[in-house]
Amino acid sequence: MHEEIFEARLQHVRHKDVYRSLPRPYGEGSCEIDFASNDYLGFASQHVSVPRAVPLGASGSRLLTGNSKSVESFEEEVAEFFESPKALAFCSGYSLGVGVLAALARNDDIIILDQAIHACWVDGAKLSSATTYYFRHNDLSHLRTRLTRLRQRRPRSLVYVVVESIYSMGGDLAPLVEMSRLCAQFDALLIVDEAHGVGVLGRGGKGGVVHANLEKQVFARVVTFGKGLGGAGAVWLSSQLSCAQVVNFCHSFIYTTAVSPTAVAVMQTGLRYLKDSAMKVLALQQKVEKFRCQLSAPPSLSPILSLRMDSFADLVRVYSCLKASKINVSLIRSPTVRRGYERLRIVFHSSNSAAEVQKLVEEIKNESYQWI
Ligand SMILES: Cc1ncc(COP(=O)(O)O)c(C=O)c1O
Image 1 (cartoon, rainbow, N blue to C red):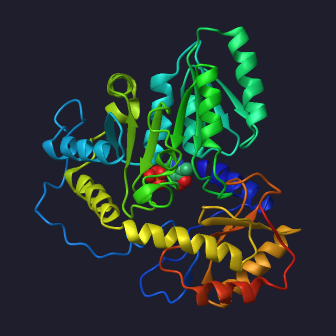
Image 2 (image 1 turned 60 degrees about the vertical axis):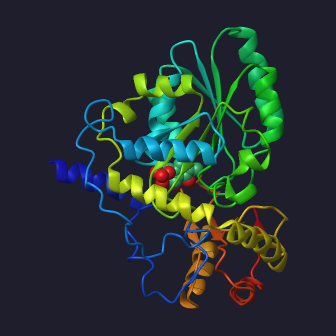
Image 3 (image 1 turned 90 degrees about the vertical axis):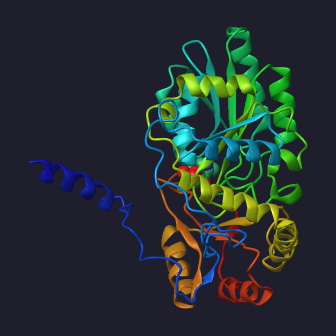
């Protein structure tokens, strides 16, 4: 009987034309031009040999047998690099996002999310007993309205505002300076997800918060290691006190096997690559400006561009033509984005050449599209 039910559920998404299946294995040996991966600096495709032998596993939860000198010294290294009082390591950005809001926001507290925020925060807010509100994407006046009303009703509640420094799908930047000012005015705690900001923005690729000089103003930052840093894993960067909340109350930190020493070595390698890559980061930042100009896209520091067309069918057609020309971009469909907001997502990397971008320009120049 479960088979019928499962089949009916899949049938439902097939009807809505949003059925998903795994694509063919990506990368190795492919001669496609990469305008799709999050490997902004080319770290993910580096073949590494681990510099020293490390134990395979952590052997238990971080609070039991899973703590280790290696994870603690990695956390110190990462906190120092990002100029944060403390860092706590997680197995992934998703497990961090899904866990910390429930740990920090309870009962009378309030969570305010940007409407375009990554799914891990939406899921995390659902696990919290606090009330969640959304504000229109990057809309400062809507955020101000929300904060004004909520503060009138709940003067003493903890209020958390969660945004991304670079939005993963649209590629636009959050106005962090103004947001941080608003949060200070209403005594709200700003959390910045830097998944796509690290390796891309700021001095040495330290992210959007460093770029805006807000290290001391934001409540917390999230650095993920699976995008610009090439590997996998994540860290929560915040005060000692907020880290103690996580250690005491965050289920996805407590009730799971700690990040393994091998995973720590992967994160540490990504971090060390970044430390050695100031010139590469600069080259990426310069290329982003130049490539955006080549494509007549709005000027921005973001390497992520999104293109919309009149119909989904047009997007699929252009996507297939690009594929046939060995140009790999991503077709983003609902439910990842809202229906009607489907798009082609184009990502620049430090390795992309002007000739590759020109090839892309040639492919799309006669199409009718708008940049988002
Ligand atoms: C903005 C954002 N936050 C969090 C995550 C989750 O990070 P991870 O891939 O490490 O689970 C992602 C990944 O898709 C992301 O784009």
